[in-house]
Length: 103
Image (cartoon, rainbow, N blue to C red; front, side, top):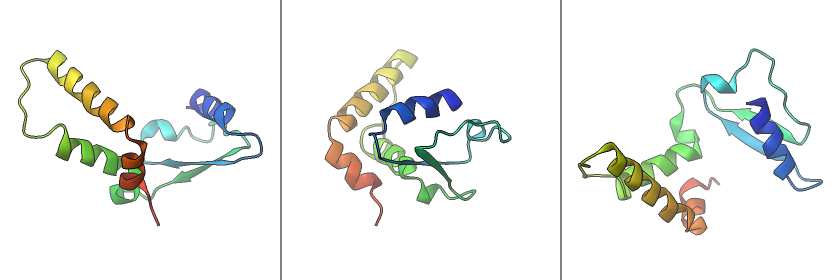
């Protein structure tokens, strides 16, 4: 996770500051050993609050629109369907904003 944060830090524009929303995943917690760059603030969500996590809304959208009511014939077909759904979504940044935006 520290390496991931370092890479995100390198992508933050000079003079800007990033806030990363964290859910309760175990790799987000390293017992105080996490190296957080100065241009990043971590914002942990409260436990059991998926409605506050914008990523959960993205997954829900994918499940309801592109990955629902289908039986795939193989593991490779599942992976292909997931890749197609993801690529379709990321080709529409306005849709991502509308799904994940908060007031």
